[in-house]
Length: 488
Image 1 (spheres, rainbow, N blue to C red):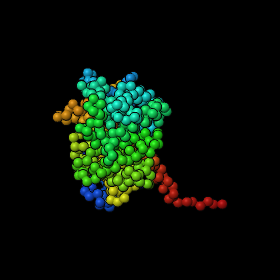
Image 2 (image 1 turned 90 degrees about the vertical axis):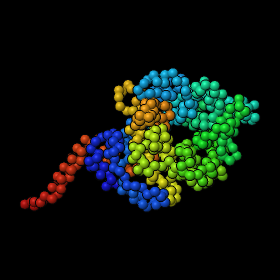
Image 3 (image 1 turned 180 degrees about the vertical axis):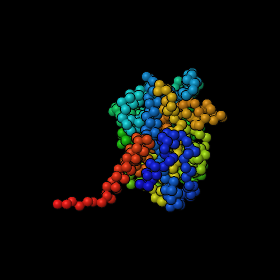
Image 4 (image 1 turned 45 degrees about the vertical axis):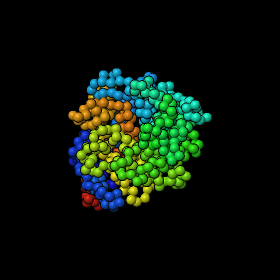
């Protein structure tokens, strides 16, 4: 590690600030190609060792998280509703838009809870509480027992014309809405006890279980006016969201049925995808986050509804399906998809961050996968830091936002100025997860000297090195000076 740190401190490529080296993708030395086979573990480690360099500036990462958090706080109004769409150039572009998405609303609450867990901020709990109250007052409510044909009370998050802005939409209870509502509400509960009655949380959990099939899969929608369970729409992201919601509920209410429902969902995804080609697998970051939480509750033992191997094999395959090669990353400038969209890059970083909690424990050859995941994460985070709006006036209301597309393209220029709430939410969650797993958990070895160097900048770094060199030279000269004998 001494050699790597020394090269970073003294390399001419680092004479600019960390921000500028992040901006100039062309200045980053092209890494050697990674062997295409994940089985060639030794070759892979050698390749990555040869290209080892400091992944991301701690200072820039910290600033990005702060600006992203502040953006969500500024854009949560007194009623608890987030600014769903905005534009960095035309402030009136979405002034008349009535579109809203309660799943992304819950996701924003979740991101704020992560920011607060990372670094307590007195402004975050009130904003979260407003947003939770908006969720409960505008979208949550019970299902009629005559519709469910069940004696159990169930609650759901309802999408309707009033909430979503979608004309003529009948009241629809989405599985993912209930799953992410559980994630958001339990996050609020950890900050403020009894913010939501336990029986309401349990009613949401019962709805999720009600929508689960025997094989662990789910029905995605419940539309009372159209007969209840709607099988015409299938979302393969909803099982991961539902599993995460049940696990979040289990941590507050340790009823084994919540854990069992979550485990069955992961087993279902494993069965569904185990024989699929990588190109056919969804980049399911919610399932990776749920798997991380599930593994923490399983410990070293298998669950009756899902073995550790099944959960790990599924997660590893999802990770493999998302990975880009170094050459592809150079072509995209670090974006983790080939069309320069920020949000899919952020969700992949979220998923990878969750995967890092268990990938180090899997057996060969999957340990090689860990290195590839970290390689993609580092590139993706550099890309997000470049895309974030951090310049301009301090009063800029869009400070800290992430555009839908970066860099701007003629064919998608509108996307390069549009900011949707999930663009910021997922970026914030991804950056926090990256910081936690790549820095705080020791995945990147950080010396105190490097931390100090990042904090004080290159100018003082050179001064410190000069002083240390001068002291060293003086010390050598004094040590080498002939010693005179004393006469008595």
